[in-house]
Image 1 (cartoon, rainbow, N blue to C red):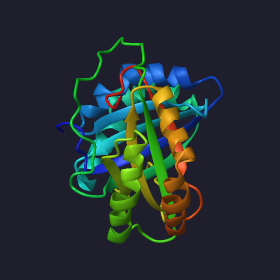
Image 2: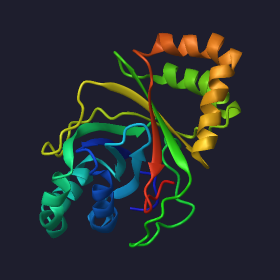
Image 3: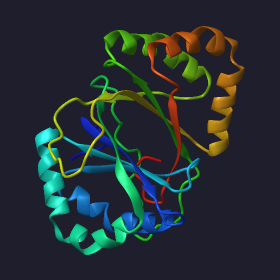
Image 4: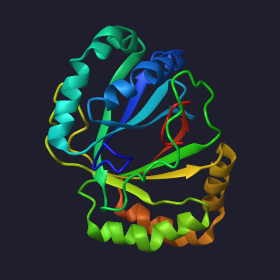
Length: 244
C-alpha cells in the first residue's frame, strides 16, 4: 500500500485502564506498526487524546473491504499478535469504539506523507497535534451537506488557521471482519486538521469562539443540519505516528 490515500479507514478509540496508555503506546509503536503494514494495511496515525488521559486513538487504512478482511485475518492470526495480544489487551477496557469511514471525495483522503515514519526506538513525540471533528445526524450525509461544508464551513475554518483538506464519511459496507466490531447504524462526517502545536490549535478554537460570522451565520446553519454537538478530538501524535 502506497502513501496514505486509503479508500477505507478505521477511526479507533480505545478506553484504557487508568495509567496504562503509555504502556500500550510503547508496545504499539515497537511491535504493531510494521507487523500490520506487512499484511497490506496502512497504520496512518496513533495518538494520545489530550482531553481524555485514558483514551488511545488510532487510524488504520485499507485498499478495499475484501483486502481489509484478508489483512486483518493475517495479522490477528499471525505470530506478532499471538505473542503480544495478552499484554495489549491487559491495558484495555474497551476497543469497540470504531467508525468505518471512506473519503467524501476522491481527493479528500489523507495525502502522501511528507517524511517517512520515525524508526523503532524513537520515543520523543512531535510538538504538532491533530484535530478530528465528528458530526453525526439521523440520516446519511449527502452531496448537499458536502457542498455546504465546502462553501460555508471550510472557508471559515481556513480563516481561523485550520487547513481542512481531509474529510471522511461513514462507509456503509458490511463489516468484512466481524471478529472486530464497528459502530453500525450511525451516520458520521469527520474532518481532520493538523496544527504545528497545541497553542496553534487553541488559537484556532478561540478564533471561532470570537468570530461573529461563525457564531451568528455558519454555526447555526451547521447545527440545524447535524444531530447534537460535534465531537472534537484533540490528538497528540505518538513518537512513531506517520500523521503528525
